[in-house]
Image: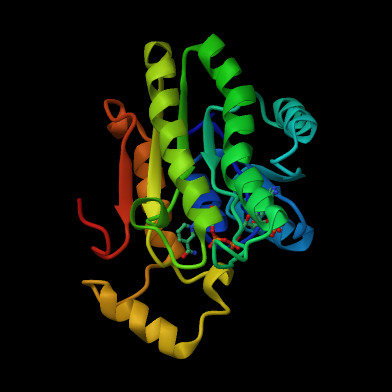
Length: 246
Ligand code: NAP
C-alpha cells in the first residue's frame, strides 16, 4: 500500500487504532482521526512513525459537515488525497426504546450513520474524480441481530449497511469498492462496562466461546482495501466467532 493515503475515523482507540496500525504496516500513510483523545491519537501516530511510517492526527467531529470538510482539506495538504476511507468512529448510548431520549437517539445516529455518510460524500467525490478508492464501513452484528437497549445503535449500524450497498452501486463504475465489516463482541473500551455475568452469557452464545480482538477486525479491513479484494463490493463480512450466520 505504498503511496496510499488512508483515513481511519475514530482511530485514537480500540478497533480504529488497530486498523490504523495494520494499514500502516502495509505501507499506507495514515490520517488518524479522533474527537477527544488527542494524547491517544498522537500515541498511534508515534507508533507508526517509530516504525518508519507516515501519519498525523486530525481532530474532527465527523457528525459535522464543516468539520469533515476541514479535516479532508487538512489531510490533502499533509498527505494528499484519500485513497482508503475507513468509517469506524461510533458510540453507544443505551436505553430501552420506550425510555430512550431524542438526544440519545440522535447522537448515536449522528456519529455512526451521519458521520459515515458525510465522510463518504466528501471523500467519495474526490475518489470518483480520480477513479480509484476503497471504502470500508465498520457496522456491527447489532445491525443483523438487533441488540437489547440499543435501538439507536442497531438502527445506525443497519443504516450503514444500506449506505454501503447504495454507495457500492453508485461508485461501481469509478473503480471504487464499498464494503462493510460487522464485528461481533470485540474487547475494547466500548464493552468495558459490561458486567461479568453478562460477559459470560455473551461468550456462551458465541460458537467460538470468546470475544474477538481489534486486530482480528483490522485484518479483514486490510484485506478489503487490498488489491486482492478488487472484485468484492457491497458486501458485509461478520467478524464474530460465528455469532451471526446467514
Ligand atoms: P471505542 O474504543 O469506544 O472507540 C471509539 C472511537 O470513535 C474513538 O477513537 C473516538 O474518538 C471515536 N469517536 C467517537 N465519536 C466521534 C466523532 N463524533 N467524531 C470522530 N471520532 C469519534 O470503540 P470501538 O469498540 O473501537 O468501536 C469502533 C467501531 O466498531 C464503532 O463504530 C463500533 O460501533 C464498532 N463495533 C464495535 C464493537 C465492539 O464490541 N467493540 C462491536 C461491533 C461494532 P475519541 O477517543 O477521540 O473520543
